[in-house]
Amino acid sequence: MQAHTPWLTAGGIDFKIGKYASSESAETVDASGNFFYSHSYIFNFGDPFYHTGVNAVLHLCPMWDLYAGVDTGVNTNIGGHDNNDRLAFEGGIGFNSPDGKVTSLLTTHVGPEIAEKAIINGLLPATVNANTTTRALSTLTTVWKLSDKWTITNDLNWIYDSDIQNGHRADAFGIAQYATYKINDMYSVGVRGELFRDPDGAFVAQFVDNYDFTRAQQGLPLLSSRSVGGGKTTYGMITAGVNITPDLGVKYLKGIRFRPEVRYDDSFQTRPFNDSSDKDQVTVGMDVVLTF
Image (cartoon, rainbow, N blue to C red; front, top):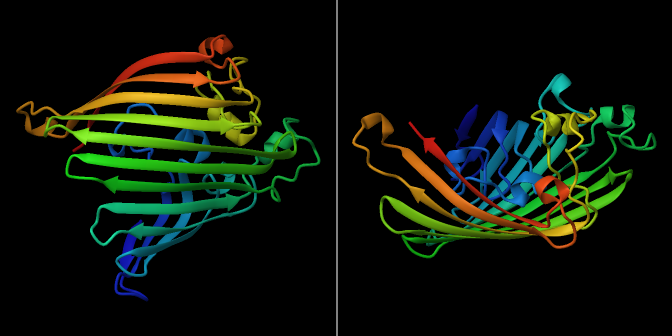
């Protein structure tokens, strides 16, 4: 449920109640909100996908917003779908420039995110208490509309967990830079570059079996032996893509969008690609998004 109330200030307060996409990161789980087909390391490993709880945005004035919320944690739900017994907090501050060209949002999500079953199954030491650990995921996203055609976006990210690395603290941080240019109503082009540092090898991983990502969040053993971490390294990535929104002359296809892209990834210290045999890789992909 979403609601707007006229409380406290002239701008009022907006509420989200239930299951909703995270406000962190320049990218989102909704494909229609992203320029590129593939996702950044920050989106995949440094930010939540969604929350279940209550989130409020207080519009202090046209330039400043305050964010605060309580939820079940990162990518979790109510009851048996939460991986521990504690709630988490999300808060932040948003800036909107008077000319409407610059928006910036700094948010932090803090709470215990380690699964109790990871300790029960021996994946983490018995000395770890899932309900007293701390994971903080923080992102500063800034969007600058240079003109009607140019848009520049920047993501700065830091994630830390007090016990995820065999009962010890681990950190990771990254920066992603986006630039998109609208050629005309049919074509837009974009470039994304990113550096993501995982010095403890605790956050970036590949999940080969369809269920291994959710099993990892639930604290269950993984099904594929090829679902492994990328090691202690820094990742570099650059993506070039095109958004094509043709007029096909069909009413129900008016919102169709094609997103072809080419992407290059590199690991500075390890060989995480191509079944852990290569230090870099090139991928080509495309999807079709239809909004209606």
